Image 1 (cartoon, rainbow, N blue to C red):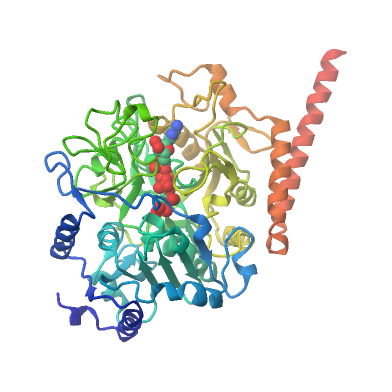
Image 2 (tube, rainbow, N blue to C red):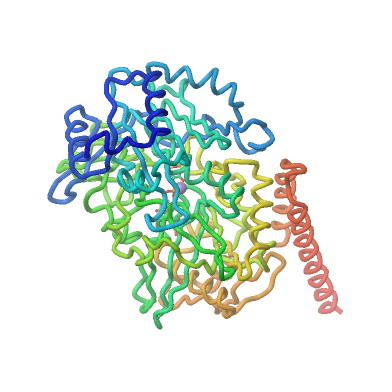
Length: 601
Ligand code: GTP
Ligand code: SPV
Ligand code: MN
C-alpha cells in the first residue's frame, strides 16, 4: 500500500507534517501493518543490532531486544498528567502544567529524529466491530516500538478505515531522544488527548497505546462518557456443565494478571476451563441489560517473563513459542530465551546485558522486568469472544495485591459501595515493573495508582456513580495469593490452584457458595474452598482465611489517612464505609468480650 492511500486524513497528515518539521527525521514512513513491512523493519533491526535472532527451530520468527540498561521499566517519577489545573491531576499524580510542558519538554523534540525515520503508526484499540473501540496514532522514531505496536494493537489500515476523515484520535508523539533519564518525560494532556514521550524505548513508557492511552487518557474519557478504563484482566470460567462466567481482576503490575488470565485447571479440577479475554487492560461499559460489559482494547500480551514456565503458566509458554519479541531476557548458548524460573541456569548463558552470565554473581541472568510481546491469538485458550465487539458480561470484579500478612486469601464485599472501598483500600508490595525499590508496601487504589489520568478522588466517585447506573452490578471480591508464613514462604500454592478460589467467587456471584460474615466482608467457610488433592493443612487454610481485628483497625486508620489526601474530591461515601467497617469490628469485639465473660462465670 502506498503512502498516499494511507495518508488521506487532512487533520492527521497536517499533524504528522508539523511534527516532522520540528523533529527533522530523514524519512517519514506511514505504517500499513502488513507482513512485508514488518519483515523489512525486522531485517533492518537485525542488521543494526536492535534485534537478535533466536533459535529458529525452538522459537521461529522470534527475536531478542536488549534495551538500554537505564531503560528497563516504567519510570513513574518521570510520568506527568498535564491537565490545566493541578487539582485535576490530584495528589497521587505528578503534575506539569501544559505551559511548563511546552517550555521544558517540547524543545527536547527539536531535531530529535535527525538521522532517523519517523514512523506513523495508526492503531485501533478494541475489536474492529466494536462501537467502543477507539483510534490512536503514534508517531515514533523507534522501529522496535513499531513491531511491538503491531503485536499489541490492531495496527495500520484497519485503524485509518475506522478514523475516516475524523480528527477524533489520540495523538501520541514518541522519540527515543538520547535515552537519558535526565531528559526523559512521559506527558499526558487529557484535555487535548495528546501524549508526549521522550527518552525511553521501554514498554509502557514507549508503547503509547498501552498505559498512556488505554489507561491514562482513556480513564479521563471514560469518566466523561460514563464507562471505566481499568488495569484489569478479563477471563471466562467455564464449569463442567459448560456455563461460562466472566470476571475482571485488577492487580498491580507484576502481581499475577497474566497468570490468572491464562490459568489451566489442575488435574484435580477436571471439567473447569479458563478462557482468556485479556491480561492487562479492560474497558467496561454499562449494557442495556443493566450488566457491566467488557472488551479488551489490546491485541497482544506484554507479559513478565521471569517466573513463567511449563508448570506456572503453560498457556503463556505456548503463546510465546513463535512470533514473539523478548526484551531483556537472557539467552542460552543455542539462542533460546532464558529467565529465572526455567530451572538451573545452563552453561554458556548470556545475561540480559549481553555479557556472559556468572552464576556466582548472585544477580539474575534475565532482568526481573524482562518481558515477552506476543499476539493474543496465539494463546491456546483465547476466548471466542476476544474479538467480539460487544464484549463479555462481567459477573465479578476482583481486586488483589501482594500482601505478606493481614489480607485473607479471598473475601467478598457486601455490596457495590463497600466494594468500591475494598478497591480503594488495595495496597501491594512494589515490583520490578516500575523503577524504584521493590517489596515496599504502598496504597494502589484499584491497581490504578500509576495509571489514573485524573484526580483519584474523583475516580473513586466515578466508580460509585457507575454502581448506581448498573441494575445488575458485578459482585466485588478481594484476593491475596501472596500471604507468607514464618519463613517468608507463600502459604498458598497459587497459579493453577487459584482456580479453586475462582470457583468460590463464581459461585458467590451466582448467589451460592458458603460464607461467614465478618466485619471485613464475606469470607469462605472452612469447607467452602475445595482443597482436595492440595498439600495444605487445615491450620494453613485457617491462617489464610483468618481476620485479625487489631490488624484491620490499624489498616482502617492507615486507609483513612490516605483517603484524607483527596480532600473534598473524595466522595463522602468512602469515609462512611470505613466508619461502618470500624463499627462492625467494634461490635465483633464487644461480642467476643461478652462471650469470654460469659464463659468465665
Ligand atoms: P503486568 O504485566 O506488570 O501488569 O503484570 P501481571 O499482573 O500480569 O503479572 P504476571 O501474571 O505477569 O505475574 C508477575 C509475577 O508474579 C510473575 O513472576 C509470576 O510468576 C508471579 N505470580 C503470578 N501469579 C502468582 C501466584 O498465584 N502466586 C505466586 N506466588 N506468584 C505468582
Ligand atoms: C505494567 O507495568 O503494569 C505493565 C507493563 O503492564 S508496562 O507496559 O511496561 O507498563
Ligand atoms: Mn500492567
